[in-house]
Length: 268
Ligand SMILES: [Zn+2]
Image (cartoon, rainbow, N blue to C red; front, side):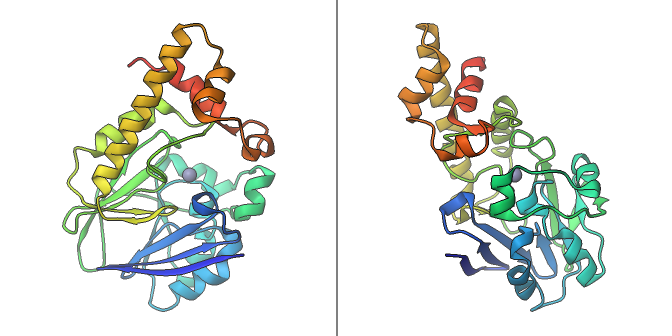
């Protein structure tokens, strides 16, 4: 069954969309603050995203990273509102040409559509001159950039948060960078986290700290077992349980074993 839900938190509105209702990995929330939209949502949900966006004029689209659930509708939003979306520099080449995605992701999100974007400035602004600061937070993806709105205590987290624990990692994710990014954002002043998968989290900074603590805890457990000579797949099975269907459907690209491998390499 598809997912639809509207959100309103102070100055922020959102719409949750998704072709399937299987929790955080198949649902996406497009947020807006007035005429500024954060991330474009998956292309197979365009009809519902468009309905939400058409309620008020859109003058600006800011993208957190190139992944298709975040950027899928950027081309259509650009056309509909005659704007050029802004994206992290590292995302722009992939966004401009489009890129292939695995079958499972195609089914869940649809395919990304090529879109021309402009660079994010060091400081962006809402229509009323409220400052929006892009914060580069690699790990989940090289280009991932969150958006901090200091005056409101808001943090739009892209895919930095998603959930308080991680049980799987994609092959292209970098755990060391993720840990560094989670540490970096603890230096910022914010309370409310806007996660496109997990929703609105009131104690957002603590939630990110908890995620960091949970990763470090997992790493130390993995290292202890690895030093005793346990093989990676056995550690994964012992600490996280057997691989589920996702690992098989993605040919091991998104798996518990990937996470445990990177934990074992960590220099704590
Ligand atoms: Zn992503």
